[in-house]
Image (cartoon, rainbow, N blue to C red):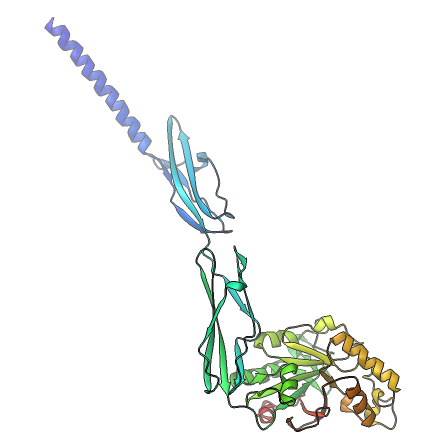
Length: 407
């Protein structure tokens, strides 16, 4: 009787040990089935790369992985993603967290240049700005502007722009503000015509052509020596005594609208003005080319007549300029047409620098506030506002000569 009981116990223990061994082997095999996945954080609108793998012992069985849902990378939030894999009789799953987060700083864009210039005593005028965020959109109204400017003390200051999006990301931008002595001696008004790049196989046989690389060197000099390039409005206001301008100021003008000045004929001018953040004025023959070819923040467009830039018409007048012997009605109609196209009466440039008493009267009657000629001397507030002199810059103008002109 005792032997039977003992035998039963032995069998029972054997079965238990056998089952335990089977279970341990199962756990061993199950533990060898692994899913490799980690929590992740990705930017909104970014790409979630599912770097999830599965192995059984050392065998790669990643192709058997299944998941219950995907991450919506366009929607901010925390996603719980469950990955499962079944191999033979073994099954395992792992849940991870994927956070889609807005971690992109807002972008602030300044209107006008990153470096601006003022004459001592002049109130700093904010040029304007905008701010955008990849999630919140336009947040310009949230921008805070601070500065450390003392308008009565010569020096370099900063205006700081700061904006925060809903996620707490902070974007900043700075503008350098330089205060110097005011101009009392007059400024150089520079006059260009055509731009070309010989390295691109371009040619320009006119005497008033300008090589792009030389123009760049001139802009480099102005930039490195902290010259203010005036808008036509600033120049007009200075001429009329409404504002002061820094001692180092120049006005860049370009005549006609031909080679290299517009998108349709080489597009050399605006890309450089945009790159250097410098202002210039184009005196456009409005009837010859579409004004849309020249539009840029840094380029003002004024009148060079609508269709009177023709020489050898008037035998008794300078250069035979058509404007000087056309009827009064014809001239006035032409000037009005150019004003309609430029949407400005601020400034006018005489074709071929040629003028007479009649054309002077016509320009004034048309309402122009300024008119430009040649002359090769500096402009001061005392010169005739309808005969403002300019320096012609051509391909033979050396950098040394340029420096002497603007200094």
